[in-house]
Length: 162
Image (cartoon, rainbow, N blue to C red; front, side, top):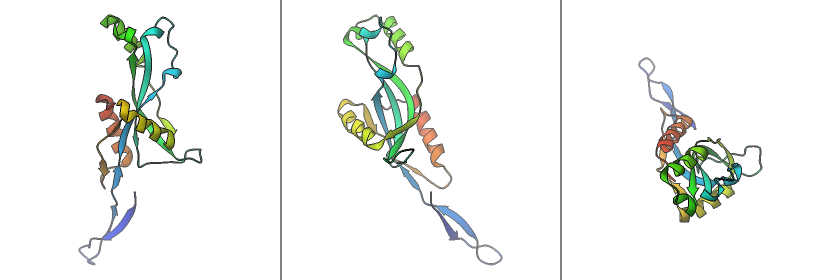
């Protein structure tokens, strides 16, 4: 955020300086990443689990160079969801719910991913509905970038975008 000093006047000298901040535009996106290989799936459950996806939120305007020469996005973990196989969808509802409880609520971690990999996943995900542009947000003077991203995290955890 860039601070600019602005003269707004005062009672004694006719001058008062205060800082004015340029707004920051957040271009939030959501993407689902196939993380099936990160899970140890019980051999008994394997025929019923097709894929397990981690869903993430990121700001496509915010790139960083975290321990790398290539730009990276900071991905905020929103949650996981399980995609059942055809055989899994034929299971009784109670058994399906057991699979969801077993594999969807293991948590995940925020982290950095290379921008080119995420942009490829985002483009490919648009065809499969596994990625989505979200509503643009402008951070103004009385807000913070981190606070706004935390609010977006909480909103999209409760209302999964993908």
